[in-house]
Each structure stands twice: as structure tokens, then as C-alpha cells.
Length: 185
Image (cartoon, rainbow, N blue to C red; front, side, top):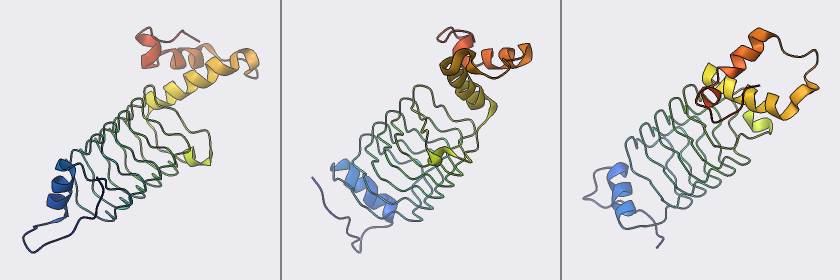
């Protein structure tokens, strides 16, 4: 089912209308949520492709398995949000705050994270975009080790001059190596 959210005299705010639409499985494709206050909303499995959440407050929001294809999150607050298994293909996260969010198994093919903050985020089993959209992303040491581990395992002995023992120890302290799910470098 698809349709438009229409504010009536009895509706208190956009959050109330969104919850009402989600309960009725109304597709929110192309919806305009610019600057909306929508923290703690359960968008699990929702159809939100091409929606615009620019500058919206989406902290602690659950997007588990949602379709967010071509969705805009420019400068949005997504702290502690759950984007596990979400389709984020071509999504725009320019300068968005995704700190401490879950991106586990999310499809981020061609997503644009330019200038985004993903400090403390869980990116396990998510694809990392190898395009200009991953430039200037703010990451923490856990993510840095994870990305370095994947890069070094792919290039093998091609690293010029080899790695120092200190560099090798740093990469091998990656949580995926420590838990035994990835071989030591």
C-alpha cells in the first residue's frame, strides 16, 4: 500500500503520523522528512526508498531490513541507530552522524559517506564503498584496524618494504582476528 501522509486537525505531529502510517504498512517512498524529529521510531522493514531525512533527528531509530535505496541522510543524526541488513544502495550520508550505529550486513553499495561520522559504529559484514563517497569518513581505531586487515589480506606481499612487527601486531589486534574469524596477517 502506498499513499501520502496527510495532517488532519487531530494529528499532533509528524512522529505520530509516521507511526500511524507504519502500522498500516503504507510505503513512504519519496517522503520528505527534512529536519524531522523522529528519534526512537521503528522503521524495521519499511519501504523508504528515495525519502529525504536530511538534517533529521533519527537517533536510536530502528531501520532493520528497511529499503533505503537512494535515500538522503545529509547531516542527519543517526547516533545509535540500527541499520542492520538495510538496503542503503546509493544512500547519501554526507556529513551525517552515524556514531555508535549498527551497519552489520548492510548493503552500502555506492553509498556516499563523505564527511560522515561512523565512530564506534559496527560495520561487521557490511560492504565498504570503494568510491569517493568513502573519503573523509570519521572512524575509530576498531574500524581502522578492520579496514587495514582487509586491505592487507588482499594485497599480501605487495606492501612496499613490508610491515614492521609493531604494524603487524596492531592489525592483528583487530576484533575479527582476536575472535578467530579472520586469519592473522
